[in-house]
Image (cartoon, rainbow, N blue to C red; front, side, top):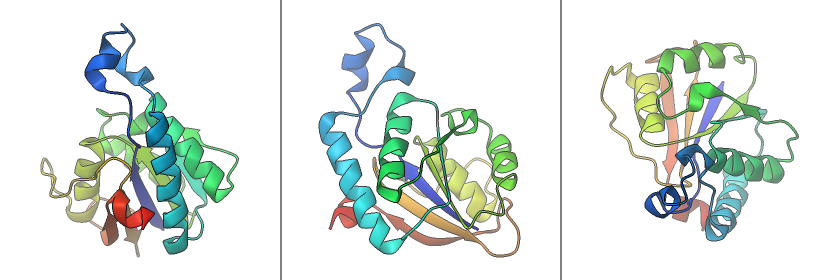
Length: 166
């Protein structure tokens, strides 16, 4: 199995959005963020021609990123899963992923620093360290050869958005 890890695109400013009184979960992508995100996925498609399943945090900015991913990859369904919320326990995500281990390529869209900590754990089983940083709109690809479990992932690539757009 390959796991495509995607950080949501550029969203509305956190502080300005909080002045509206709305919860952070409702903060959307900016128009510029949507355009850049589409270009990111179009570039990614040259490197990774297909995905089998797309899952997203239920937060608006992540789900909007997932919708763009689904459009570029011509997928109809997006799983909206609480396991990708910013404070979700990594074990819950691993349990969810194991339910889909027959898929060749699973794409997940979420948030920092959650994704970097999750990726570090999938690569090295590190308990509380992150040795990666994913920029907004950036992507990483892990591959699991034998088993899908913590410490068994192999890093294929970790790309910032400017590389994807080029």
